Structure formats: structure tokens, C-alpha cells
Image (tube, rainbow, N blue to C red):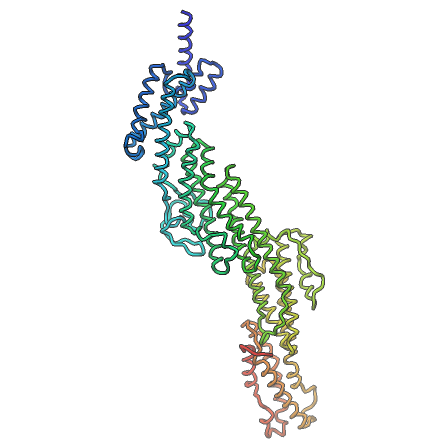
Length: 636
């Protein structure tokens, strides 16, 4: 009697607890957790915590009925049944199958607590294994049947979108969150929603039943092939890092552009979307979710980074600097997104690899920059440039620096902590150009100042080289014309590029003044002798002999012809400077010559035979001067 009352009391306790928990309306998982907690206070509730909380406690006879029901449904979809795929038919059948798996799991949990040696538990285990085989097959089938992302042409992964070598995509009607250039994280649908929901329902049963490893294996193998196909579409097959060291010129440029575009799309679209898919399929199972994403994303991302690493370890030729800087800039801007997309602890290797490649690209760019500095410093050309025009070294160095200035942000980071040794003596006072600038980096401690100093120093070296080359000209006037042309070219390049922001207006003003100084020195050297022929030094016309007067006109004619002959090959390529220089010469020469003729023309044998000594009218002379500095070639 006491035993019956005790049993009845236990049933009432269990029923009451069951009613309370059910009335809370919580989810199944939360309900089970609450029952587990309650069982720690009353062991009479331990069996209930392993039962389906949506149903009252089951008796042995009920278990038999449940087992038979699960057996009927699960066995009906056995491999030998020759039925079509479960999730390929009517939705009601799939729902019935999943419900049977749930009931079977609850039954096994109850049996494991109340009767762990029961033959029912053995039968249930066999049925569970059978159901897992079926669900694995369905899981794989759904994954392989949905390998084409649901993309629009401008999502960056579609075959329909045309792609230029510079990484821009063709136009097209966009899907949500258009991001053709992959400038920010943009998640796209990697799979239709109904397939995602089916995969989630299967994954939930498999992981709960202890088949999480199988989920990771099947998902990883299948989705990796999808990722590889997407990467192939956007050009990864061209990124063979084994050929980087032997690839040059335009082909390497194409590979670099492909890498930049691929990295952006891979991180911000492809793997960001794959991560979201993992979250959707394995909702509530964080460890399996992160393992699956790591399984899919780690290897291909590491291979992509490997190309950047290989290029960074290649030769330090100056023609590679801008490609390396492009890659550095790309990866630097991608790092926050990499930290976001690969935030799982399972992906720490990807984050570490990306950081290491970024450092190596920075080191490579810095090494090439220093090699360029050394190359300019070691240049020892002893070739005179015909016509005093722009030296090839000037064009090369200034175009190179102008392009470099477009990478100001990256270069500031790369050169911020690189020491440089600046000698304290330079020829012809050029050190003054350097010392007068506000470039005391040690005092200011600003990274941008470090870059300014390095760029300014390279230009100072270039000016030294030009100063040495100018001494190769036998004509002093031509040497000044050469210095004027080349410094003017330097000034124009600085003024028209980002170099101005780095070197400053003070630097620009000082060197513009030096261009004017070179121009003045040229005018004195080239035209002073001719102008001296036109000076009468105050001698009255009546006192000047015919012989002296004839000598003056002869001297002028010879001088002007000699200057014009020399200038037939002298050049000023800059149109504005050319016009200013002609105007300055004309304004000095024509009024002086006109005044000279006015004073002495009538006195030359009283005007008889004056044409023998006066070869040029003022208009003739002005016409000759108008053709100065337009020659294309001349060997001084």
C-alpha cells in the first residue's frame, strides 16, 4: 500500500512539473534544459528531463508503439525501398520523417535513463543509424543540387557579367546590396531559401544525434568545390604563384590586377556570403557552423594570399613597385573585413597569414623604394642631351615619383620607421634647398614628414646629377638652358601631382625662383655679347668715325648670326616657358636695336650703301627671334 502511494505521489510530482513547464510556452531545447535543472533538486524528475516535454511521461507499452511508428516511417525510406529522394517528393513525407527521427531520439533518451539494457534501445539505435544514412544522403543531394549561387550579373561572380582587366564589372540589373567593385562586404544568396531550410532541418537532426562530424565532412567537400568554381570564374586560375618570379611586364600587371579584384570579391562577397550560409544552415550549433566555414574558406583564401606572398618575395626591381603598392593598399584596406569574415577561432590561421603577407608586401615595397634611391644616387651618365632639353633621367625619376605620390597613404606607413643617412655637403649650394624646408622629422615625429624628406632627398640627388651633366656643355649659356629646362620639368611635375602636398608650397616657390635664375643666367650668357654691340656708351654720333660705326654694325651682324645659328638646335619643350623666354629676349633686343638704328643709320656714310651693313630691320630681327627654341635636334 505504501509503495502504491509512493508511486502515485511520484507520478503527481512529475505531472505537476510537466504541466508547469509546458504552461511557460518555451522552446523545446529550453524546456529540456529547465527539466534538467529541476531534476538536480528532485531525482524523481530525472526521467522526465529525457522525455519529449511536449508529451506526458511514456509507459513501456507506449514506448513500443512509438518505436513501431518510427520503424514504419524510417524503414520505409531505407536504401532498399527504391523510393525517390525524401526531400524531392511531397513535403508532408519529409516532415513526417523528421518527426519520426525526433520521436526516436526522445525515445532513446528515455530508454537510456530508465532501461539502458532494453532490446528496444538496441532497435532504436539501429533505426537511428538507418535514419542518419538517409539524412546524410539527402544532405549531400541538396548541397550538390544547389551549387549555382543565385547571383545577378553585377555581383562579381556571375558568368553573365563582363569583366575588364582593371577589375571593373559590366553593367547589369543588380540584386540587393549591389557592390560590383567589391568595395564593402556584400552578402549574396549562395543558395535558394527552400534548400537552406531543408539543409537546416537535416543538420539539426544529425548534429543533435551526434553526427556533427559527418555534417562537417559532407558540407566541406561539397561547398569547397562550389567555391573553387566561383574563384575560377573570377580568374584564380591565372594566379600561379610558381611563375611569379619569371613573369614580367604586362603579364605580371594583369596577374596583379586579377589578384586585387579576386581578393576583394573573395573576402567581401564570396566568403562573406558563404559564412552567412553556414549561419543559416547550422543555426544554433556554433561549433559545427564555424568548423564548416573554416573547412570551406581556409584553404582557398590561404592560396590567394600565397600569390601575394610570392610576389613580395620576388626580385626588387623598380618596375614592380607600383604593383606591390597596389597589392599592399588592397590588402591593407581588406584587413578589417578579413577580421570580420574570418572572426572564428578556427580561422585564426587565415588572419595571421593575411597580416604576415601585408607585412611582407610592405617590406618589399620599402626595399624597392630604397633600391630606386640607390639607383638614382648611382647614376653616372656623361651624355650631353641635344639642344639642352629634358634629360631621360629627369623624366624617369619625376614620372616615377609622381606615380609614387598617388600611393601617399601606403607609403607613409611603409617608410615611417626607415632611417636614412643624408650627407651634409652637396655641390653648388643645393643643400640649401634641402635644409631650408620644414623637414625636421626627428623633432616633428610625423610619418608624412619622413616620406616628404625621402622624396625631397631623391629630387636633390637628381638636381646634383643634372648639375654635373650641365658641365659637359661647352657653351655656358646652353648649360643654363639645360638646367632651366630640367628644373622647370621637375617643378611642373610636382605642381601637377600629389608631390606638392608632400613637399609643400615653400619648396615649390624656392625652385620656381631657381628656374627664373637659370633663365636669367642663360640670357646673359647667350645675348649679352650681342647687346653690347648695340651700346654706344654715350659717344656723340658726330664724334664716331665711319670705321668705328661700320665695326659696330659688323659686330652686331656677326653676333646675331652666331647666336641664331647656335639656337637653331636649342630647345625649350615647355610651351609656356618657351613663350616667356622669347618675350623676355625680344623685349630686351628689339627696342635696343631700334634705338641703335635710329641713332646711327643716317650717319653711316650719310646713309649711302647702309644696306651693306644693316642686314636686319627690327621686324626681320623679331621674326627670327620668334622661331627660337623650337628646334627638334642639334648636337652642341
